[in-house]
Length: 195
Ligand SMILES: [Ca+2]
Ligand SMILES: [Ca+2]
Image (cartoon, rainbow, N blue to C red; front, top):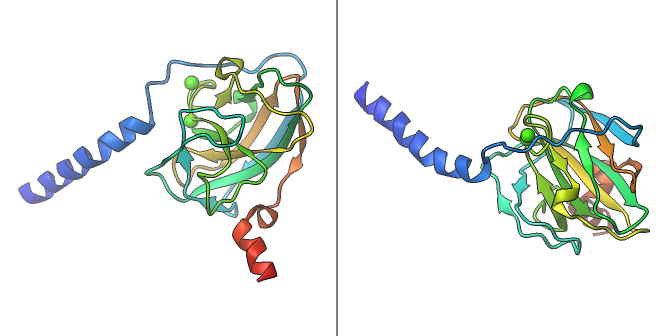
């Protein structure tokens, strides 16, 4: 009994520093705007593809933001394409009224995102800057993109097994260019096709 308890305490002690490093105190609650911004929507469910996600505290418009491996693996994800109309800072905000996922994460990639190499091509990442534990990339993050180029927004979750519908509001210099099929997203798959 005592041994089991100390084992549990040891596991907690080992797990906590990693968790604390990834999940900071949530002090930011960026609200979606009330105006009729463009949006995209989708659903994460048990049939969604999964990946071992990363997190990042940096922003790099040139697709090279340094990342950290998350202790959380096997997250459902969805890919949506966006483009910008100018080089002003962008906003991408999960809409709490239309999102049922309890704890989202959002990663912005240059095209393409490879679920087998999620640390490559990263522009920015956010966990909790939206309302509660929802995600938001806001103008405060100063993310500037290149018009005419496609970027991929990967909507996923903090932990594995989190599912539900989501809607994402885009700032007025951002517009959606459609969902991206996962088959088309995977460099590994493409290499497999032409090998
Ligand atoms: Ca979150
Ligand atoms: Ca928040």
